[in-house]
Amino acid sequence: MCFFVVLLSYFIGSISFGYLIARSIKKVDIRKLGSGNPGATNIQRVLGLRYAVIVLLLDVLKGLVVVILAFSFLAETWVILLACLAVIAGHNWPIFFAFKGGRGVATTLGVFLGLAPLPTVVVFIIAAAVIAVTRYVSLGSITGAVSIPVYMLALKYPFEYLVFGFIVSIFIIWRHFPNIKRLIQGRELKLGEKVNIS
Image 1 (cartoon, rainbow, N blue to C red):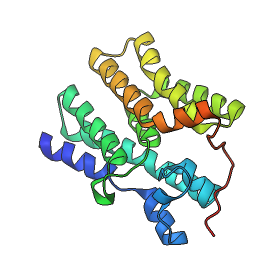
Image 2: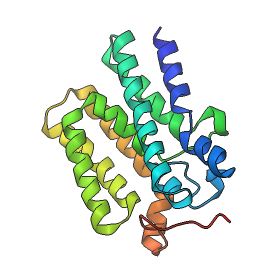
Image 3: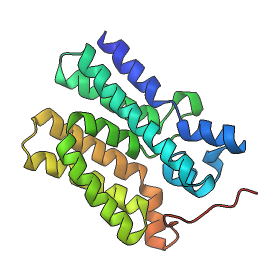
Image 4: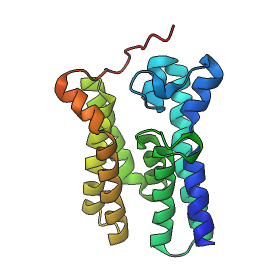
């Protein structure tokens, strides 16, 4: 059962809603436009805000569904967290889309909403504030990734949760290396900037 749930979690994560919506609406491969990321931010640049919100909610839902699934069928904390890691890995490296996925932020948000709602809400507010001030979604995401294990530590979550938080934080920062490079070079697109696909 443990192996099946972890594997299923990876497959759930591998459903790339950004790719599917971009392909069905505009007949384009979102991975070849803008930042090449099939997440909500790049969808906003290519398709607009409405579709970005849809992708964001669906990607968050993926993570939350896996948390519910894991707690329903698994007993050991470390296996539950492994399933949560699997859905994030599936989003980042989806088997259905040549292992080319997103940064994992929205799916991670869904996972932590299920695992640790209070620090997640606090971190979300901090990240949103950074995005509002700088208009850099990547900078807000990186800030959130760094913050969540710190808040989990401050609120005295179990050791396994802290380790998981640090691993996922490193995951997100690693996936944002191209964004970090563009931020340093001053080439990172800001929230609201569009990509011409015509």
